[in-house]
Image (cartoon, rainbow over all chains, first blue to last red; front, side, top):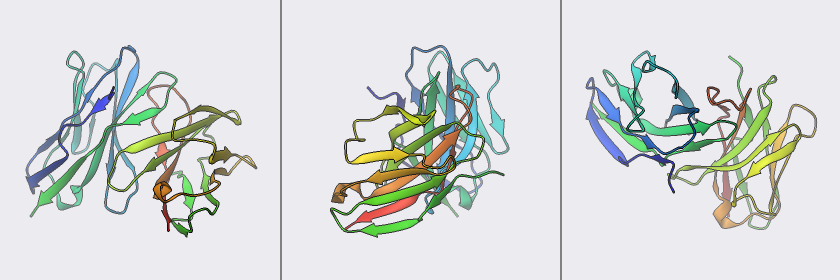
Length: 113
Length: 115
C-alpha cells in the first residue's frame, strides 16, 4: 500500500500566486517525520522543509510552509508568492522511527510568467 | 555547508558491463543510503547501510547489486552486469541519525545510461 500519496501529477500556476501541493500519508507509528524535497530539471534533490509528528505548530521556512493536519494525515506544502525558479518536481516524503525515508510519486509544478 | 559528493555525474555503459558508482558521504554521518529514480518517476529506495553492514534492502537490490564502504570515507554501489532497465539516476544520501527528525543530505546524483 502507498504510504505517501501525491494526487497532483502536474500543476500550472501563475507567477506570484500562492500554490498548495497536496500530500497525504499513512502510518500507524506515533513518531514520524515529514519532508518536502524539490528536484529542479538539473536533477538534484533539495531539502525544503520538515515537520515532526509531535510538532504543535506548522513548519515554515521562508516562502515555504507546511500545512500539517495530523488527524487527516495530511502534510500539504504551501509556496507563497511563487517565482519562475519554483518550477520543479516536488516530492513529499516520510520517515518512521528507525527507518528509511520513503517518497511519494511527486508533483511537477510549472510557474507561468 | 557539508555536502555529499557523487562521481561520476554521468556514466554510459554497455549492457552486461560492471559499473561502480561512488559517493563520499558527510564525514560525521553514520547512515548511508542509495536510491534510484528512473526518468520522471518516483525515487525508489535501494539499500541502507550502517555500522559497515547492510541494514535493509529493497527487492530491487538483487544479487547484481552490492555496496561497500572500503576506506571509511567512500561508499560505493556496484552493479555487476548492467541491464537496460538499470538506466536511471542514482542518488547517494547520508544521515547523522535514524531518528525521525533527521532527514538526509543527498548527493547530486549519477545518471547511468545502459546501452
